[in-house]
Length: 207
Image (tube, rainbow, N blue to C red; front, side, top):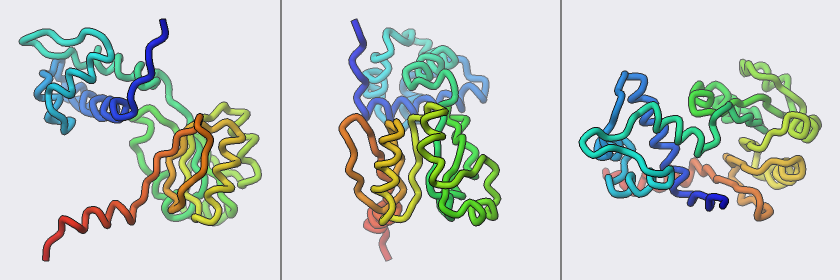
């Protein structure tokens, strides 16, 4: 019998648990209690135990969860046994900044290529990964079986590039472009709207 798909919110929390457990492992912790892990992840203990139950029977009363073993189980659940390739489209100021982020590989992802309409300008920003022209996007994705993309193009180009990504086989898009994308049901888009996030934060600022 096939396992039912994990709820999206559980997947997000799994990612958080995974990062918290990695920090514990780096600090030589062998076990962690549900209350400690829940506090580090920003959830309550009952929610954490319910989420971990998706992985099977875990934890020993009085001892907690084995850190390294639980990391392996979460990595498998998140399909991170090997680095998952990602392409970035739009290597302007924001795209270049994302490419300099060192945490992708630690979390199981590798940005394998960047694409831009002006690769000379992109290269001048100190990008270290391979740079390609936009026209090479489809062939690269197909040849390298890439399923994930980061989109950082201006709003007026976002839908056209998205159509190209989907046709090439991309199944997940992290969208930094200020545009609402039309996608087929088999493709997932996570929207990162920086202006909206700041607007939400400003509500809590007084004075």
